[in-house]
Length: 373
Image (cartoon, rainbow, N blue to C red; front, side, top):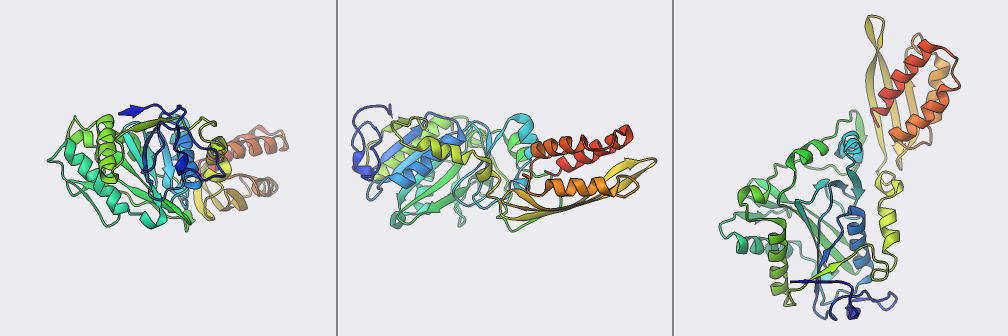
């Protein structure tokens, strides 16, 4: 049963006194089931932050259901250049987000259900949450073979991954969130989660590729709406709370004071890219020259998403050393980003001699450099 969010009564008992109470249907003394009306990944991740930071969860667990428009979400300690195809994402307008929890990279779209289980730190139990999901699936389809693994994934038929897990454990509160593949675009998933970048060395947490499958491929009755309702019912029964799905609007500052600033931070360049652990890029590409191709060596170190050192070596007879040195020095301190690289190289090009042949080489070189970013 869906219940609208913006009503006078609230779950004041769940809020710390320093934060204005958020408006919910009834005072919740035993727990809540929430569902976002937004499909924006930054807004929904901001809800997780807000609940984790502001809600008193002792004896009052929360289940948060949410879905996103197409996006890629990386873990807190991951390197996006290693984890996904940023070029393809830019071309398709696919958002990139970094969550607060650890774990690997996932693809979200409207065929993927996200579930966040909020509890106190002492009540945190990922396996219990996964068993709730399994029981709900078996209510809808009793013959479905879904089992949790030691890594807290869910496997279909013992081989296909349909859910991955990540978590954040704070001083008092904790949450466990997981995906559930219902009808996700698996072609988009496989192409976007395949990095084309070469020569990256990093200590960032790597993702572990898995063979995946949609539940809808197993049974057409397993739609997102059916599954969310089933999981909500099973969660309510397990925690002995009312089976009401409360609709919430993550953009509503009157209900979630300060949430817009959390969403803004989550979509900032500094968080998405700048939080990346220090890494280096060492690669070689080739440029056309007469009847052959000349090698260009590139060595770049990136810290907090910005270029710390840059050494692009081109043969002197192909590109004058003075121009190569200008290029190297100009990149220091700039974002490791093709847009910023384009701006810098265009500015530098204006300082080069008015030589059409030289400008042609410069453009070729710059396009190659942007290709590694």
